[in-house]
Length: 324
Image: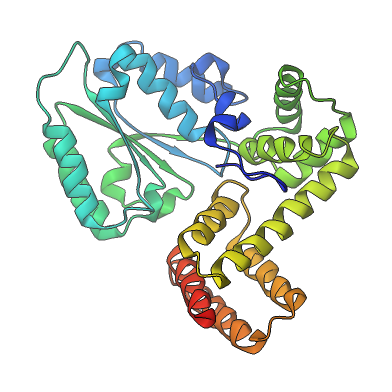
């Protein structure tokens, strides 16, 4: 779901998907982790549950998918369940989906089924406790791979059942080398200063770096100037777009675009609100005061700890009501 300033691309056109490693040996940087994991999965029957922690865009999910491919081979599609815990927070998700999958009989020639639980640190502790039971009940046929940015939010009984791997942010050299490889394959001209600027914006988040390079490529060469205007452009013009969609009553589209900015481009929720606030002033909208009041209300709710994705979605829905 990549967005460049001028065009909306399908997932198929996203470089970040096109160049996602499919084997452990292709993963950038995390050499120590990859070494340990290769040893762990040599004899998969002994593999414990795994816990991957570390910041965004450093390869946690990619490595999880590489492992499932390596262990399950041609059966990986049928025997892997990928869930995003932050989208499906409740205990119901844990019980229904995981139980159904783990009960599903008739195992092919595979040692076990694999459940990848992304953003596991976003699950409520009740859901985590329910999950602990399921881990115990399905021990014979399932292995879990937990992915979390912040491991301290995972309850101890789950942590103690996992082999934990802490992923590090990717070094400037590794990010730039990877960007150069992709640029070469995509026949995009790059210069060193442009790539360095991409690294500075992405701070070791390779996914963000690749997305930003793709957005910049739509402006031409990857120069420092183009990167700067692309980083600014992408953010402010896309937030303008979200505001326009919401005010015209297109809430699902506005929400999709907003989540993309936050999840894919790594824009923080507070930045999103800041940008939307200035977009409102620029628009000189006749209901300016009402719109600002709505934004302020949700800014406060997020500040006091409410779930930001739910609150921002509600904000867009409320903005849509102002027009109608």
